[in-house]
Image 1 (tube, one colour):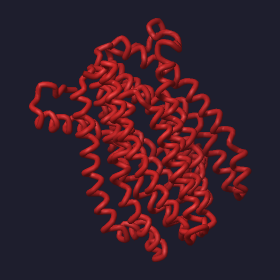
Image 2 (tube, rainbow, N blue to C red):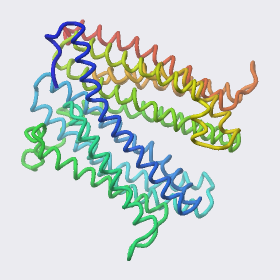
Image 3 (cartoon, one colour):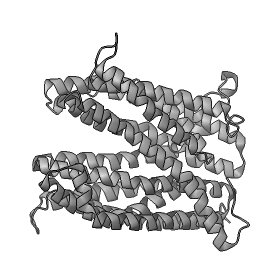
Image 4 (spheres, rainbow, N blue to C red):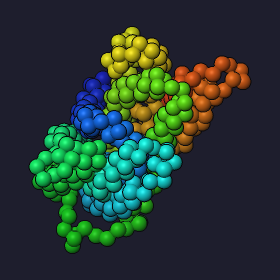
Length: 465
């Protein structure tokens, strides 16, 4: 990954944009491939029956917050590795990878245990017996894949910290390709293998997760970019060390996890609250969430690239390089978001019609997409600032701002707008989306201010010059 230190000012920003886009595009394609895994599960299980489709939807909703436990913690490895690369502390890069692997093992096992013991949630939901059984079986089988995917994430966030994002894209694409025939075998049955229905998606996904780990190990051992940094032999691996890795990973990673859980739980609670408003409202909300989640992958991918570039510049102690990454990355994300916001606003109803032929669903979903168009700029700014703060090793403020913006404003104020009648008529699902809009506006402002403060602090301490 090149440095822009000696380039003229205008050329330096252009070179920085090229570096960011080069990192972001493979991440974006990888995210799309991983999203495709869920789409494939939904489509293929839906061919069996409504109960199987319901089991996949519910099981995925319960899987996601558990999955965030390991994701958030191990995500800390990317800015740590990027900073050590900037410092050219290659021994520390290897040390942090080894400690992340040690950390991934218990995280994966804890996730497995939690996912296998969610029957109390299924009991509380009072599900039909068939849906209960299929969901429980799906969670049981997919749980066996969680240790594998946690270990994979340790390798993934390691090479992404080095500025290598193409491996993530390739492995995610191969995972999607593998998932289709495996789903077919275990959902519908093949030869001596019985048909498991929706539960077969769990078996297929677990196999895919361990396969991703195998591909990751083969890559880091064979690639000229990583092989000199990686040793998986027990004699060189070392023991878990609180002082030499795990403490730093948890210090950055635990706030990451909580921030991700605040975000995921916001949409989970909204889905529960609007369930009483009827099928049309639920469907329209799902349409808007599905579309906006896909669009959000663009600024999210750029934010992950910003994390790498700012982490590298932080390790080098180069203030100007940090400023270039921030201005270029967040500015570009903002410009792209204005384009997507305009398209979303003008094409809101045609977009909704792609998801549902129901006129009532289209009408309500179109209105929700108008609100979504209004917050896309703020969403791009806040996620870009969050990515930069991670790169500069400041994640606690992200956790605090996420809690205030998502839970206090998005959920709290959203609930009051949706169902309250103190000063206004209840707004229904629109109230929650207004809450999301206001929450993201607040997040963009607070994270921008804190990012500016963080840079000033690092200049004061001499870590950036």
